[in-house]
Length: 157
Image (cartoon, rainbow, N blue to C red; front, side, top):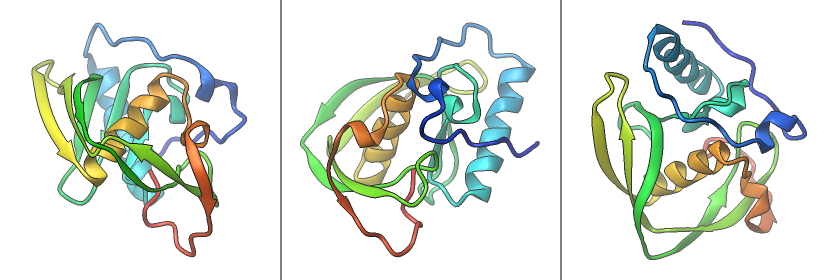
């Protein structure tokens, strides 16, 4: 595994749409593992492939319950709404309130190519939406309601 460089706001790759992953090979598995290591090192709870310069539909999330690796994630259901503070590893030093679904159901492939369905609420739902937005070239700042001062960066995505 290796640490990858996190792309920062202003990098054009963050505004591009990622391509589906058609073949889960060793390169994709290495990418996912590197993304986990990079996310952990940066104290994040999620990281999308474009944030490390790869335009592929892959995300990793860990809100404290263990790592979730998603390939080609797609939200198939969402319920409710919730406004809470978000940050982003690609936009250090900024945080803002964003309206997201309170719960989501997401379909994706795991690293073995098996289709999975996961229901997430609260922070997990927020992280899933945030990371999928990255795959579509959308940053949380595009949806921010109000910027807030946050003294610590533990809740960054």
